[in-house]
Length: 370
Ligand SMILES: Nc1ncnc2c1ncn2[C@@H]1O[C@H](COP(=O)(O)OP(=O)(O)O)[C@@H](O)[C@H]1O
Ligand SMILES: [Mg+2]
Image (tube, rainbow, N blue to C red):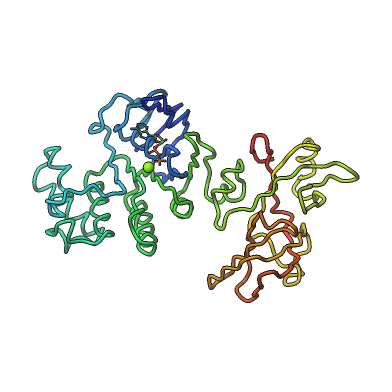
């Protein structure tokens, strides 16, 4: 059993740097939770407080219901894997993996058994006598993970463990970590700035910004029901398009912005939600994948239609990212995701529709989703 609860956790560094404001997060036993957010948002600080490497300024940290704020790191039974591997260069792989157990005075036989078993799981058994510098980045990261596994901790913490690997290896290691989570049945908290990594790994994702939790949700809920403009823009690639405008009430409720204007459709209770915002500033958000060329796909009728001018085109093989602006305003660039079969040209005018079920609006004052 290993449930981790952060109740009103706060961290203020010397010089009044508020790294974490007031974090409330529950990580259930055996859950894989990902903390994601841009660089500097407080991810490492949060993880280091859980590990006991950083003092907690306020709030309660509970592990299996017991408050551990003042318990030393070595007594928390938590293992942490770092981005830079933090291996001892002069030690062999075996000794690197065994080190923590030796410190804790485990019997030699037990250490050998655990290291060998773990090296089998991670495909490291042939390398036990090598030193870190004789291994690739991916292998080194496996040793760092192995060093955590041999300790059989209650909780695994990962701080951007794949950031130093190339893209292909990252995908491979991502799958290995996922498999590992399944086979070890352990509680894992994983930190990354990469939203794709977060989406593919997490059962539950915690989105952080400026030391504040923005939303805690499943990957698909973050994508479909972002709580605010930040989450909407952070999750998804290419990123969601946003247009600042306002809600106008004439004969019908309308969204009005420079070069674009449309009636708010009745779907999904949008009119009811937006009516209180009549006369107010809002942000209209729409994902590149929920737009389609009206000429290409006539069957999808219910849409908000926009006339756009294609600016630049990125063909990535399976699909194309077409960047565009609204007539008259090349300053504001947006993205429309197209199939690879249809090619556009720069300067081409296209009528695109945005699926009415996929329109998102945010309050411009609070940036909360409406
Ligand atoms: N030891 C420290 N002393 C003062 N400020 C720090 C210290 N460590 C981190 N910070 C600040 O706290 C904030 C969060 O940092 P960090 O947790 O490392 O972010 P992340 O891991 O999300 O990139 C940043 O503004 C950073 O500059
Ligand atoms: Mg960090």
